[in-house]
Amino acid sequence: MALVRGRNLGNMREVHTHDEARRLALPLGSEGGEHLFLRVGTVNSDGWLPADVDLRIGGFTGSMSGDLRAGELNKLCSELETLHKRLVGEVIFTTLEGWIEIRFEGDGRGHIKVSGTVQDSPGIGNRLSFSVPFVDQTHLPDLIRALNAAVEI
Image 1: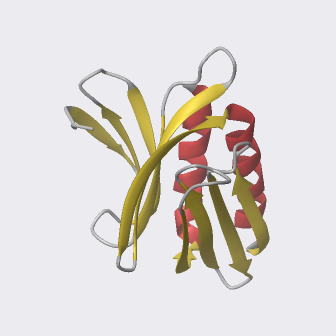
Image 2 (image 1 turned 180 degrees about the vertical axis):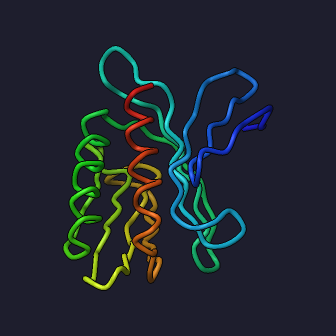
Image 3 (image 1 turned 90 degrees about the vertical axis):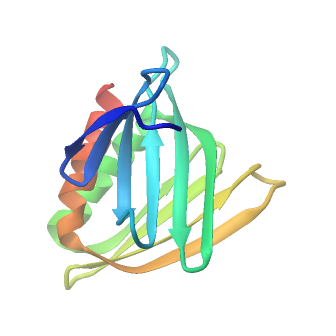
C-alpha cells in the first residue's frame, strides 16, 4: 500500500492510498517498535469492513487481510471504554471468521497487557501468537476514537 497523503489524528492515522480508499489505522505500539496496526476500510452495505493487519512483535513481522463486521468494532469500542474507566478486567476482540483475536487485560494499575493471535486461513492456516507486555492506559482513548471513526466511515 503506497502512501500518497495522510494526516495525523493523534495516535490514529488517516491515509489515502493510490485507489483513494480511506483507511484508519488502529495502532497498538509505535511504528518504529513493536506494534500491531489494524487498518480498516469502508463499511459495505452488509456491514462488513475489509481490514489489513500489520504487526511487528519480537523477531516476527507479518501482514494479512480479512473482513470484520461493524458490530465487532462497536462491541470492542464499548468494552474498551469500560476497561479505560475501571482499569481492571479483560476485553477479547475476535472476528466471526476467527482470523484475528486480540486480548486486552487491565491490571488495575494502568497497565494493559495486549496479546492475541492472527491466522492467514482460519481453521486450517498458519497461526501467530503474540504478546505486548504492557500498553499504558493513556493509549486507550486514541484507540477508542479510532474505533468510533472506523465504524462511522
